Length: 235
Image 1 (cartoon, rainbow, N blue to C red):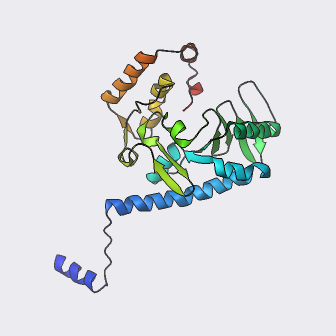
Image 2: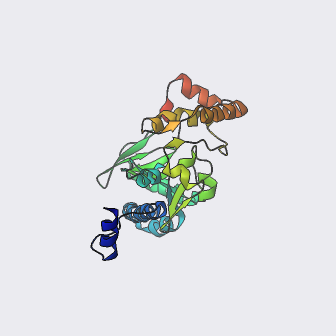
Image 3: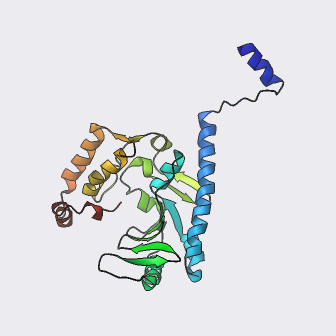
């Protein structure tokens, strides 16, 4: 049977469907590039015309959407990060003026037929989130992410991994020891990833607890935990 298959391959009747791990990886990256080009274009169309070019130049996509796409899953949302505080201020001012309700914690309404929510952390337009809490270049922002599998970003048609692709291709959670903030939030967010089928070892949990021991609890973290308002922990 093997000899017949080799003969058919040689004369071109049967195509070799075997792909190397590198080929599979590159195909996934190309697919992600195409998808995120479309996603960014869609969001830019929702922005005021005077900010579209600047947003195109000074924004990038990161977060869990790249991990989801790499594994062939539909992301629940797309996180956009911006390099300029001034651009963030103008985006917030613009969308707050479009809000049909305003509050101390949350504002929003319908914008172009899409659900819009504005908080201190982000401007959310349907599945698109413009993160306003953390602003800066990719290396500055992403190196503070909780977990190594999410430390990727897309910009100008290129996907970049700041950890290692082995963490992105796998299903295990590895803590980013370089993260210097919000360790309580990191631990609180763990079940979210476990519910999606990922696993975490006792060793990784120990790293988080030791880091928490180093930095301690802030008064705000204690308040959130006491009031069971875990949704206030960002990303």
